[in-house]
Amino acid sequence: MPGSAPLTTKDGRFGYEAAGDPASQPLLFLHGIGGAARAWRGQLDFFRDRYRTIAWDMPGYGGSAPLPDVSIAALAGALQDFLQAVGATNPVIVGHSIGGMIVQQWLAKNPRTAGAVVLAQTSPAFGKPDGDWQKSFIDARLGPLDRGETLVTLAPSLVNELVGDDPDASGMDLARDCMAAVPGATYRATMLALMGFDLRSALKAIAVPTLVLSGSKDNNAPAPMMAKMASYIPSATYVELEGVGHLANLERPLAFNAALDQFLKANVTATQVTA
Image (cartoon, rainbow, N blue to C red; front, side, top):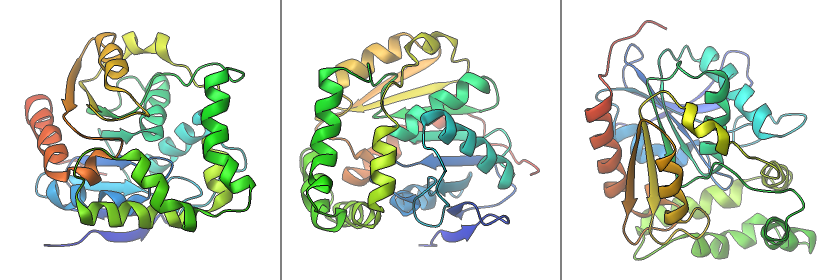
């Protein structure tokens, strides 16, 4: 199977992986807080026959430079810069977890630029910055770092807490490897960027075909919440993967790819584009 290629934008700002014909429509994948571009290699290869498949390292991850101040709005601005840097015209954008929040923020300023979007295991809001649940969520994830642990030691337990039933073994190896490689400062800053995020009022304005994808065993982005989210998006298709936790593309790559493939075939006509 052909592999994806680790690349860097000409300005050196972003690291990413890509596969497929550069003249094909871009299909871009955005990872979550514990991820990396390489977490999407199974999707880059699966869809490379019809699309120019691309996965970025979010700023501060892998080969991408960190942002001076991390927020969802700043990350959405970085996404726009990345799209321009790689010449991605009329992209289909798949955002997982915080990646899906970035997509929503980007859509608010670029409502008709994408060919379609996928909001995978994400949320339209994190809630009040001073809310008890929000504080508890952040404390549970940053507390071990405050006590001197590292993501290298925490990765196995963090990944185990995220997944559902019978996850793919190789996918779990990759998930742990990605989590362990996240710099502690990046993990902390990106986690804190969740605080105050709320685009629930913008869901009704999403004007492109949208797949809202959940896992029935996902405790971070629960399926009932995601089903409700989909009900507010005029063009949404909702899919729930049974037995899947928060890392669908790594836990059940065949099911994830099939759901995405079905959505793309029904809603996107892959085209040759000129960067």
